[in-house]
Image (tube, rainbow, N blue to C red; front, side):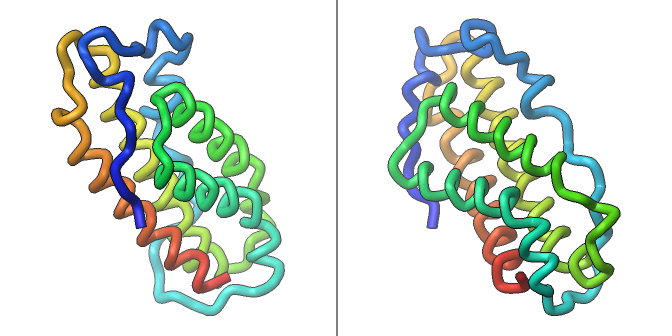
Length: 156
């Protein structure tokens, strides 16, 4: 599961979205496009797993990296890579069982990672924001993302 993240950039003199060249709205405030609406879960197929593969794999990599600790800059880069993989998912080729099951759960996980990026970015852009001010929010979002990611993996 997700553990404590090193929040080096959320201290008084830490990194801000301006210093990274990352506009918070560009990276994280955009919710992902709807891939699916929730429906009863159905077993995924090999085709579903293949089509979601890179998207899910990048989120798994992020989850593992969070265990070791990431800077805000590194987190943003990884979320952008996940977004790119998300946008490459061939939604029109996903079967109904994939869309209503693993794809929806994977999308939920992605949205939680985006929400965490928003919270962290707001802290990084706010003078005097301490790690303790945002850490609980991040941990909560990452826990929700991990649960959704686990659900997506079980179905693919």
